Image 1: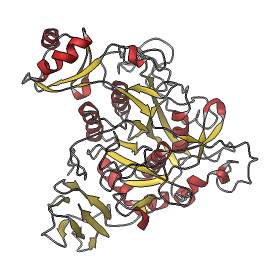
Image 2: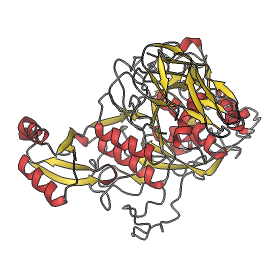
Image 3: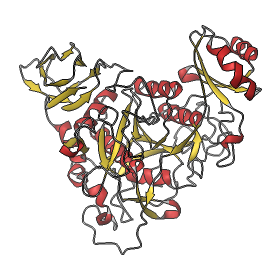
Image 4: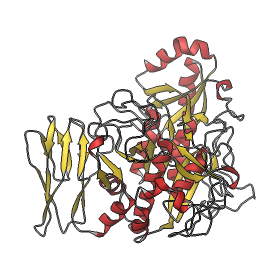
Length: 519
């Protein structure tokens, strides 16, 4: 059983941002300003969601009364996009008028979001070292990658082009030697004919989409951030070229909505997520966001999760506790987001990384990460932007081995694939660093509870996974005064404290969690 809106945070619903399909009305209209960094010049836009179904005519009539003009609809989540005819007047009176209407579920203003800052420590004109496995000449320089134990994982799977992963970011360098064979191709679209062959609302979207300006089919990276993220997930491995990604083989869907300055609008981010979902991306990497919550973004994330897509979000780089001061989308309380902090070269929390025992799920290497960059080059960057795609890549490896995993199984399996570190006590929900070998090895074993360790907010139901049981499962907890669990494995803490969760399958085998805590 999936509980779609409850996570384990002590906060109310919230959400930064992470990934999946597109919601659009025919071909996308003007989404953000065409010139990089020019978003402030665009008329103020608002997201409006009504409680009941209205015709377009009725929506226009309601908008006209308060000084709004309909600009489009995000169909998947039933949200209308509007512009204020007189922005100053609407700021003074219009929002109050529309919010006072019983038909309006919410109204919120669009805003600028940004790629999460990365810290550069230049690569790398160092001579290549002697390769081991794979044969990529810079593999031995990938110290950050080695900390997730990739070679042991690669003995089980090296990835699959059948797994589609979306990179919502500044785009991807489509012709980089390490990425050109990994970039997704829309087989249902005939390139260059000016026709929407697959009738998905996007003309000639052969390799993804660009949501900047009026939108176009060129998701080429002009900043570098998205290319670096893509290379971590899936720079082609064992091709005698440069580096290896977490996946030697994968399909990367470039979805560009951030410009050459690393900036974009929330509307662009939402549409990027929905586009990725529409194309079938199981994982959506979101190394971007800000500290303002959005119900529109939350709706997009929950839509993605309900359609089998999981957003992997960077926790951001402000050295702060996001339980106290959230970051979105990484702090979104939906099950549809996994929040990732960064670890340093010595396996401690990176000095720049955010943390939060209820709002950050796990840790991955994010300091001095060597990956692909613009113009066929490579660079070392640091940031939670680099840690998130480590986790996205591991999720893709899991799907290459077990494509039948549900989105909840994928989420809980990722959270279960950690090596616990006492240094993360009180800072990270799982207290663990993700490891690729653990992620894949657990798929080969029998009956388990996923995740085995987790910190959960009080009164926030969390659905655990019983992986590979024989027959039906009976659940119970070690202390019913602290927590309860229902027949579907949905755990709810009533008081702060620690328990073990136990499960017995139809064969009589009983297992228990390492520890589970409520606070």
